Length: 555
Image (cartoon, rainbow, N blue to C red; front, side, top):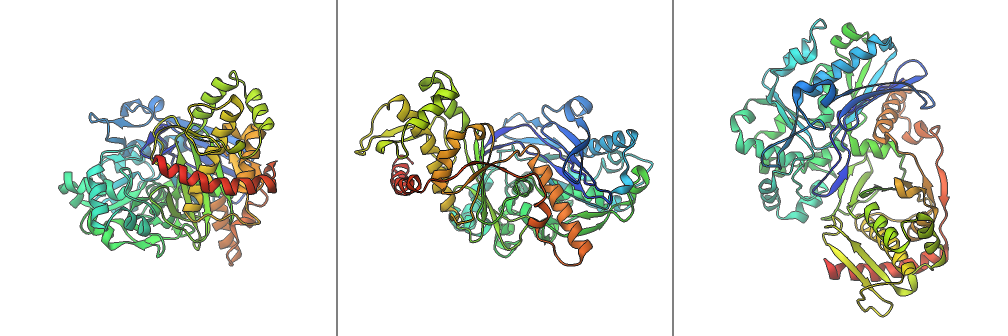
């Protein structure tokens, strides 16, 4: 049995990625049933599933509705400058107690839980005040968590992933590190406003006294684990990759980056641990108050993006493509090539590998606009046009950036004919094929820029609204020269944390480390949606070089 807990905030575009950020906590238990506590968006939610991942219990706490005293909107506070966005730290604490209380009242059997792991929204930070670990170590079961911890935070409002108020700190970090590419080479990403190192630098510069009286800085993931452990739990290397502070190759803090952000930062952050680290047994508070087994172990939590990668069950050579309002790529990498666009993190299920994340703003809304203009608003007509035009589009290429794109940084609608001449329009069929080919060529180009290589065993795992369109997926398969499988990623981060919890639990029980692929092989099978056509792939490989040159022209 497993728990998965998530503390979440609303979906929004921030700098370079649109995703729903969540905090999750997962727990394998002795029985064959599995429970996952999931917090999505403005709520903390629990979903119990059995060994076959079938849901057997659900309940939730909504921040705005169930905890109105915090006066949040979608779980957050937007400050007067419209750039500073935070969440009340103690709200998350109270939500957890309320959720567990409701579970207890419903008769849920907490005593079956034997291990606990999870994930949290990346980039959020919690500032523990001096003396707080002593409070954690002495939690009393007859008093709610929020009452005992209400004075434990030197910064009571946690900066979260939506915050974009640290441009000055980002510029300083890149300068101190020798430029954006040097920072990227070391930490996997150039400086981003929401990344934790830059948020810490702002706190140090604007609230030095509060920074000085901070004894530990947690990520949302390690914060959740610390609550259950009753002691500070270290940051794991995968979530730690999203801070602009960790050397992605050594899995250690980069001292130069730490010094550029704030003094004595290594002591306040603590040491890094692998994502499969066992932090120890659960705090007696949860044993006495809710009936957890005292033998229940807390496994290090990770970030929501790494957990999603685990939930998608990526393997070596795989790429997961989410085709939504923004299109997002998750990549399994062996030898990364850090670039100024995209992010590279430590892999959450294989410490010797990496994962990469790329986001493209111009996703489904751009496809829908072309559908409305060129196919009378009909996906059937849109698909028919794809099926009756040819790979390569007779030499026509289009780049459709309706809004400022992230990868690459450019905007505007651009079309070229077979002679390389800029044109103002295509025929409806050519326009439809151009938008799909252009979007997927861009994905392959920038995936390869980060070190992705198509192999004989590569797969494309597709999810999101457009993944139900077989004609669109055929183009995706041909461009990547890999079979495309459809996958339901509802609660993918939650499932990923559940898989991770089971992975570590099984490894501990068996003595020898069990491969992650062994744990997930019994999960529901993917559905094959498209297979690559060799001749079409040859056309697209040549086309990719031309697309690369044209994209460089507009950046």
